[in-house]
Image (cartoon, rainbow, N blue to C red; front, side, top):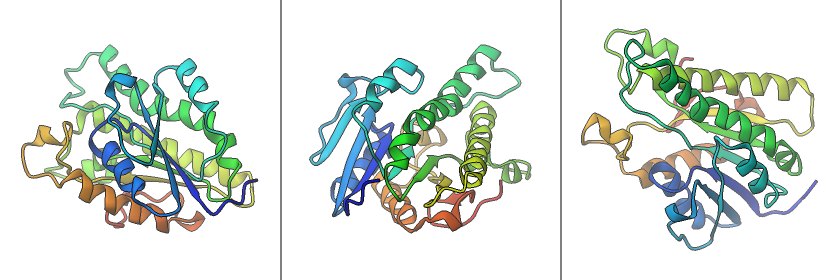
Amino acid sequence: MSMSSEQIILLVGASRGIGLALVEELANTPNTRAIGTIRTQSTAKPVPNVTFITLDITDERSIESAVRAIPEIDTLIINAGMGAKDPVTTISTARLAEYFDVNVLGPHRVIRALLPALRARRTRRIVFISSSSGSIGQQALPGSVGLAGAYGVSKAALNMLAVQCHNELQRAGEDPGFTVVPIHPGWVATDMGGQHGPGGMPPATCAKAILKLVDTLSTENSATFYRFDGEQLPW
């Protein structure tokens, strides 16, 4: 088990939006080695002090190839995902399956492949960029907001994936243990957030808040659903 004082953070889905803002913020964080994944090299935007590798979360071979270059990490942040205004009563089942392939099965593939790299370090954080659209408690209220629909269904499944990862990894009784947390990033001025119109916060503001929260997380916080500012959300 490595005891290096430098923290290694892997950000899955770093080509644009919140993901790119996160690696740009990590690039300026002391004692931090940032690794970002992109689906294809053509989507790469050079960021000083950040290593980019190709990884497609829907492709097992792509993940296996990428993992060979990542022997150890302290924190895994999974940001990659898809979302649009797709009501469940009109969306095709095939399209709904795409949501699950990207937003649920993709993170599952990545976690399974990277558990050895997380176990090689002592921090062992797994962070999902989720959404309040996946909060059943919030979505059941009148006037709920967010992309909801198929996106909300997939994010609710992602939240349960986080809880079950927590249950299984904590039950393993490993010392040190794992911290598994989903985080709602808020309304952000990205391609996805822009579907609600103007008014979202700048990605850089969101990234700073998320990383500030992530830096405070320990095993006691595991299996808690947080907003980017640290407020707890209902499942």
